[in-house]
Image: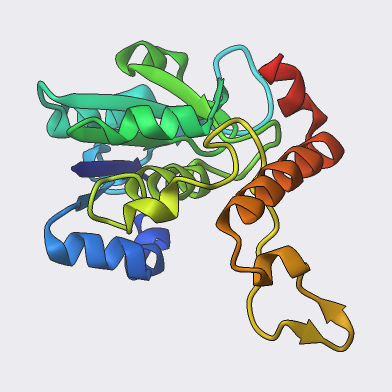
Length: 223
């Protein structure tokens, strides 16, 4: 799989690309990561990528010309382009699975007050990671990359991605590790029993309990 990120802040992805899962996937050939600086496509010695909005208003708007020229330079027949913006559909685990099945994912990071609306029709979809405002789309791009890559076959042990929050519409059950007793706080006895069926039932019940308590909205979706 190939992931291309269009951004005006390419430097922020340096440490991200050195994280274990990303770096291992690149080294093993499972992933090709491409970070493209939108400023390289802006004319003039100052490489301006933003301007004030027509009609007035606060903030600066990302210009369409450098963004669309950058997009054209990396697009191909197998590309799927996503603009990361607050007006997009909220990102979900189902979206991660869908994007992970593609060959080439292009992520466009917004910045400043927003981006020229003429950019949007050139994308296949618009995605938001939540109902809040960030300085730019770089953090959302990392979130999407991380979610998608861990679903690419070979990047992680497959069983590690199955019983997780949101995979079946519920939150994941509580997890514990050694010691079994930490200052009187004990691991539930059932997990030490060795009875796999009882453990499975306990985990299912705890998953439902946590979802009802912490994310009742997820329970509503399952009805």
